[in-house]
Image 1 (tube, rainbow, N blue to C red):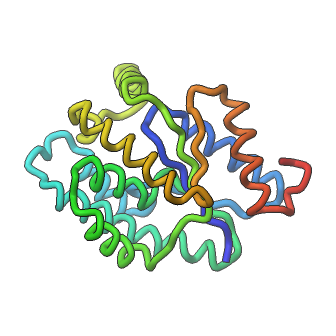
Image 2: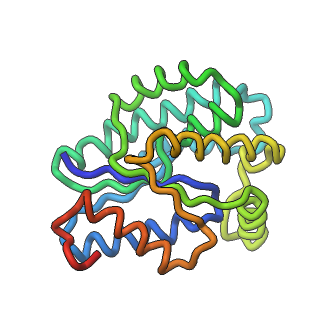
Image 3: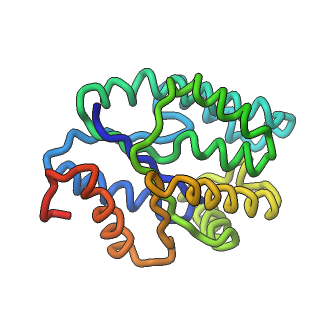
Length: 216
């Protein structure tokens, strides 16, 4: 099997920049890299993404929201992620199942055990080898996201419009998950500079991809 790396964190934390830098670095080192995102990443998943993020879908229940994310994830795993990993490739995903634990579990306060059970089914039990969480204060992340939206450089979706206490629960949920699985998670202060953040990521990757050697 290949190596599965996921990025988590609020929009505005620099995930896209760090993912692009890491993909370029790994490709230069000879890795067969596939980059994807959630929700979406497949034609079916992208359709589900449109429904999930549509600000007009105010009647959507929390349970429906979680199941739609899970449906998109199930398609992505089987159509895109698993085949690439079986070919010994590296997959880097902007969000994965930990997002549902954070947003629908801790944020929406749905039953965590139910989320774990459904996620196990949706993902075939796939767990990332490394999850990089770019940690950013809630207010900073939301202000960056809104500024990008106002500049027409990003979307402002249903989850962005939630109250601040929802986002605080999401943030706390991420840190709780990271605390209990330190071998899988790498938490980085997202207020660090771009180069410093990328260097921390590459240093952690050295154990997973030792053939990169001194390039790290």
